[in-house]
Length: 65
Image 1: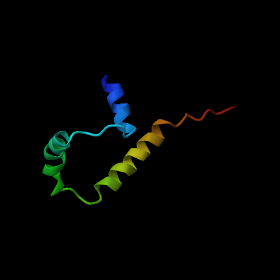
Image 2: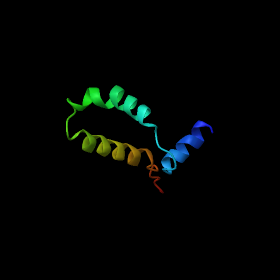
Image 3: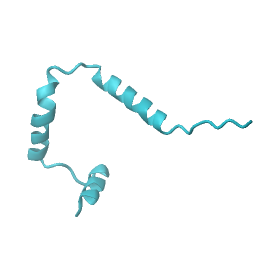
């Protein structure tokens, strides 16, 4: 199984991360920032992400003269 297959299976919820791996990810990434994380960060992040995606998919308007 290559990385693409593993990610596709995970996305389809066919497999899950082993508990030690999930704990390791939490300890390294989530736990250190959890106490100082602003409760509104997800709202701001998702709003900026949506704006960026929308802007990047815009087709330039062509003027017909």
